[in-house]
Length: 291
Image (cartoon, rainbow, N blue to C red; front, side):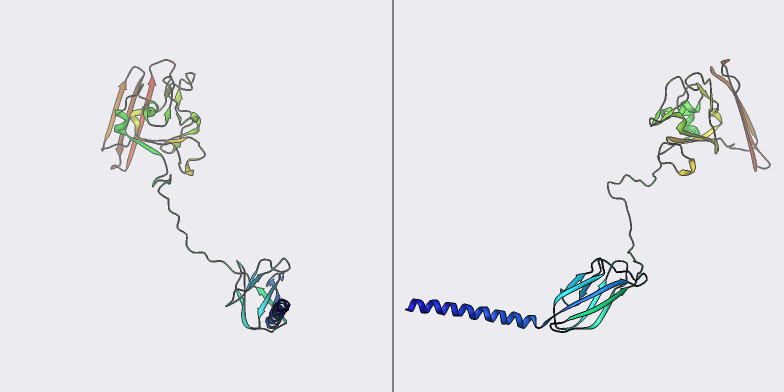
């Protein structure tokens, strides 16, 4: 008999616990409400997707759907501040918004577009950056450098062939830069472009150049990354500058070699306010012709 009494008592306790829990749930649910609403764009009046609605001071919130609607369920009865936020729009709040127990409260938002201000961004090269202080690969030769370099035929084109990145053969004065074509190199003499500055073009495009090396004061060779002002050449820029008279008066020089005969005259006038430079060269081979 005692065994049956114990079973009955256990069942009675279980029923009481279930009833108590159900009563507690009903009591809690009776104190909860719901918030629903819509969000539209102020100017177009179109519903907005992805707007975040949150109850400030709590962890409750929701996101609007494609129709601009949202629902926040199981909100304890009370007074709250609601906030609607979306990237590119001003935040909007509803203060003193009351939620009553066992009821659903409606709220509507109209968001206004605004500019997004970003903090200043400073971009600097890292320790493994390929950028340098001067991104242009530039090599320069002075008049003294040109005269000291060994070259054949007193030719400025043959003098620079010893610079890094230059490729050529022993027969032609033309050169290429880093595997490009010879016509991809822009040649300038005091800013004037030289298109085909060669003689004896039947010998690999030109055995000699028309430029007298004694009339050159310096050269600059850019083999990559040169500015846009030099046009759309792909390989490099070969910039030649003529020599400037160093003193007042005039000077004339002539020269004769195995390959050519040359003459050059330079000087200043009008109180050093003007200057002239005349250079002529003739190949000693009959095929060279006048230069």
